[in-house]
Structure formats: C-alpha cells, structure tokens
Length: 406
Image 1 (tube, rainbow, N blue to C red):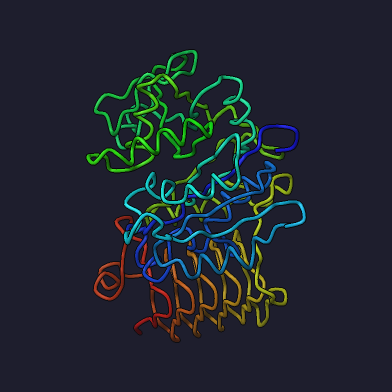
Image 2 (image 1 turned 60 degrees about the vertical axis):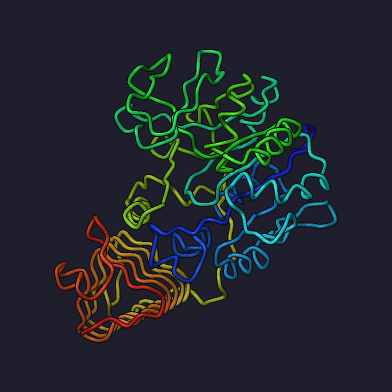
C-alpha cells in the first residue's frame, strides 16, 4: 500500500468444493467459472489489487491445474515494481504430507513471509463473490494495534447459527469466537443481528508467526484459521472485528452496497448468477470504479442472427444466437444456439451447444456441454433427477463435456 505498511496478500485457494460438484469434479473451487468471463478467484484478487496490494501468493492444492494456468496467464504484474501474483502449490517443505488445514497451509509456506518481510499479512479466501476495499480494514487494524482483525458480516441472529460467530464489544475487541452457536450473541448497536466471520483476516506479521508456530506444536489442533488460530488470538485479547457494512466502494449503490455471496453450493452459485441479470442488479458487474479483472478469451463480438434474441441476460463474446432466444440467463464465451431453441434462467459456460428446438430452464451447463435438438432440460424435474445431477433447490446441472439425453 502506497505510503503505508508493507503488506503481503495470501489467498487460500486449496478448497475442494465438494458441495459444488459436479462443477468441481475437474477443477478447484476457486477456478470455477462465474459471470460469463470470470473465475471465482478473480474477485478476491481484484479486491486486493484495487487496494494497491500487489504482492500476492495464492496457495493451491486440490486439482489446481486450471487455477494455476488462469493465474499465471491472467494475473501478470509488473516485476519492475516488485509486484506479483503467484500460485504456490503444496510443496511439502516440512515433510511428505499435504496441507492439513488452512493454518497448516500458511505454516508450510512461511518462506513466503520470510522472503517478503511484510509488516502486515492479509489472509483472504478465494471462494466468494463480493467487492471489498481491504485498505480500510488495514487502516483500522493498524490504528487499533491488534494482532488480528477479522472481517465480519452483519446477519440476523436466527441465521447466524450455521456460521462462525464473533462476539465483540463496543470497542470492537473480540470476546469470543463461537462456532455455530445455538444462541448467537447480538451486536451492541443491533441486538437482533450477529457478526459472522467472512474468513478474511488482517494480521500483524509477528502475531501471525507466533500463532502459527504455537498451533503447529499442538497435536490436538485441526490447524484451521477459523477453528484454531482465531480462538487462540481471541484468548490473548489480540483480536478485533471489522464491520464489513462500513466498507465503502467507489461507484457502489445503495442496492449493491455490502453485497457478499458465499457460492459454496450449487443453489447459492445459481442464485449469485441470477443476482447479475436483473435490470437493477443486486451485484453490479459494470461498476468500472472498482473493476473485477480477468483475461477473457479472444473472440469476436456476440452475434444475433435469424431472429435470435436475449432479454435480461448477460451474453459474452463469441456467442452466436442463430434463431434461439434467451431470458434471464448468463451465456459464457463461445456458446452456440440454433433456431427455435430457448434458454431461461440458466447459466451456460464456455462452448455450450444448444441444438434446434431444445429447451433449457433453471440449469447450469458446464463447459462444452452438448444439448441435442429437441432435448428438454429443467422441464421435468423427476426425469432430470434420473438422468442428471439436480440440486436441493431444483437446479439441473450437467458436468463438463456432458451430452444431454433426448
């Protein structure tokens, strides 16, 4: 950060994402495509880079090939200025074992911290869709003298029982870190709301190193940032909370201020896409004052021929609507739709082909899925459950390269 402390960004991107299957059968969760052109990891990296945090290590592990390739080809920073975004696979520096938890992932990668010598280390997850200015959180962290500052969402108390809940006083010092409590504590200024951890942390380097070393020596620890490191720092009075609702993003509106979506399930992933396509979107991808960066494929503009049309949808480059119609959907680069086909309230990833007369409703089609002429997807849920993966919310999902059954 210009004129401030030296900051190193660490992004935890080793998640397996089992609840997003079949989208994660062939890729790590942070590499899952989103919003037509993007990958999930692009959101956290854009937030860090927009805040002038430009030395970033992305810790990877599970099926990381497409994630590694995306980072190395897309996120090229100026080495002249000492900037970098680099994927760091599990290196087994401490013996022949993989990461056993998020804290262990950082502990096994301490060489990154030793080499960079930062004053502050920000540790963010890679699985969420949101905008955040980490510089504002860092400013509070430095002013408070905290060992760690935890970013938190305000949620209704009734909904907080499924999350890691933060009990903090008016001075923002954390009194307890509670995992899925039956009776979540309310906030001093809003008794009907609770603070839920976002999994984004700002550490003073010395506090992080001390905590990681102590955790590594604890044989009973699960070596998790939220479950192990946070309670340790809370017990020493070194942990403070940062209220995400106070984070101000240039170009944001009242409608999309404070937007945060954990896309950990098929249904939440689908809902996040539907947030993009309304006339006044809940999450505005078109805010150019805080852009989300990526490197889209080199395709010509989308083409609409033979009466092809799209309404309330996002249509990427290289799409050809050859007489097909689209409503309330997100189409990724290279999608092809033939005459009389129809796609409604769906997410189509790169290279999907929709044949003549086919109908797709409330579905997610992964890359290079082929829907033959006159096939029906999302029309008969009972039939879909016999043929495909259908989520708890009734979203039909076809994995990468699948061919629909007529």
